[in-house]
Image (cartoon, rainbow, N blue to C red; front, side, top):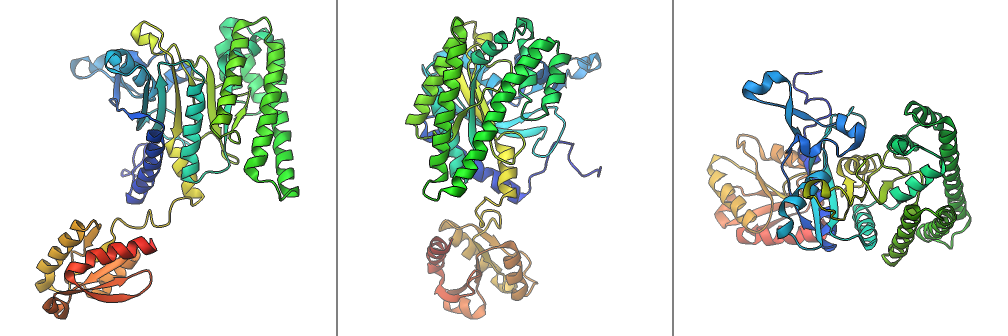
Amino acid sequence: MSKTQPARGMRDFLPADVRRREYVIGVIREVYERYGFEPLETPAVENIETLLGKYGEEGNQLIFKILKRGEHERTGKADLALRYDLTVPLARVVAEYGERLPKFFKRYQIQPVWRADRPARGRFREFYQCDVDAIGSTSPIIEAELCAAASDALTKLGFTNFTIRLNHRQVLTGVLNMADVPNDKHGDALVAIDKLDKISDLGVTKELLERGIPETSARELLDFFKGIKDRMEIIERLEQAALQGNSDITEEALRTKVNVSLNNNVLERLSQHSEGDELFAKGVAELEAIIRYVAASGIESKVRIDLSLARGLSYYTGAIMEISVPDLAGSLGGGGRYDNLVGMFSGRDIPACGFSLGLERIIVVMTEREMFPAELVKTGADVLVTIWDEASVMDALALARELRAGGLRVDVYPDGGDKVGKQFKYASTRGVPFVAVAGPDERARGEVSIKDMRSGEQQTLQSGAVAAKVVELLGHKS
């Protein structure tokens, strides 16, 4: 590795990278605020006891620990850690400032987190999360609103073909009980089941056995979930066939029809199995309510019950969600209800539910699929002001100040020794749409020539009229 490369799993962000990220954050922030969520920020570093024990076995191993400092460094012990996610810090904030927060606290938070994970495509050790969470209500309306907010954000970014997979931890617990999985092995079983869409059926079976799940239970679990997975694949193939054979139905309408049919089928099947199990039945009822509210929110085409979804984090207590995109390994985000987490800090139960969009993965996918606006990553300037000669420097700087006051982003070519033709070439390579030139003749008349680098058109204006004209042309041709 080169000495100048950043640490593995970390990245430098060049200007085009930062613009992409800020564009995505801007879209997501605007959507979140339309849903009534308020901004929150927390420190990058937390006390280590705040984080340990909140993420399950695998999560604990991925926390970046910070060794004690000074005379305590040689102990090799850690007292601080880098933020692992944005959910546990939120729970701490609610416990700390509960009296100052509204009864129903809805917040969004867009900040980096750190995980000591193995770097891979789209997976980094430092990355941003975009979270929305609602604190204070157990109503399934919350889950429906979170799904709608995430769906709106992705749609506005240009994603059309995605699915919000929906499940419920109490339903999963009921299924585990049906398969006679010992209570103390439920967590182990869920960690393995959560990998069904990542590794082979054989791999999941092997992990179930290695985690101490009885062979008969492992076989029954795999048969149950594999049957659901196979059914979903059949439905997806039928969906594609129907699209190819029927030009009168839109893709969204067909997905809505398929999801409604599948969701009703799964709920009916679950209801038959949940008789006599109060928690199981409660989970099924909550799923039914979420599906009804999702329909009212207009995103039926996006939400599908998927009983194989487990999500490994141990703090989830109710509904869980995850966003899947065809031909993409992993998800674009996920979340769920975690009614007991805030109570770990406050000493009383406070209901909570949240959703996190994976900003880094979204940016990777959008870059690969060329989903960003073409003009976004080209340049940071609307106008390049040229330097004709040393005598023109003062006028060029004054022109730049005037253009900036007019609301334009302006770059001044700093090397007056270069010919104007070379300065035009620089503007072209940087993607700057306009170049301003004030040679001796123009300066004598109080004029400026501007060239539209997109069309090749050039015109001469009074210097005081340049800013308004460029703003007009940008508005018409951007």
